[in-house]
Image (tube, rainbow, N blue to C red; front, top):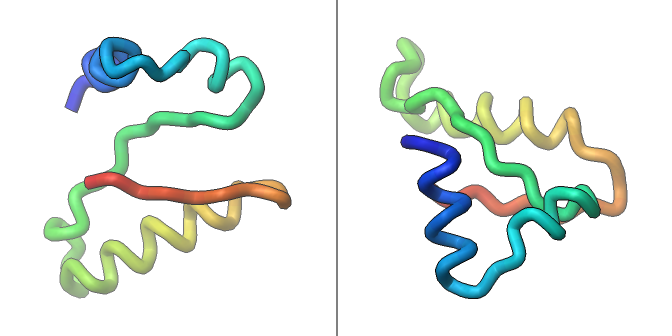
Length: 66
């Protein structure tokens, strides 16, 4: 997926993407496809979420849209 395309779709829906990013309230990133994990997709999702949560600084809210 193309990150600028997602940002444009959000902006077209009335979300001030640039302002939220500047305030560190929004980060859009490409994640690996959990289906490609040898251990299975559940393990893949678990690994991805744990990696993202390890980088967050409190107080943070995490939402993943896939």
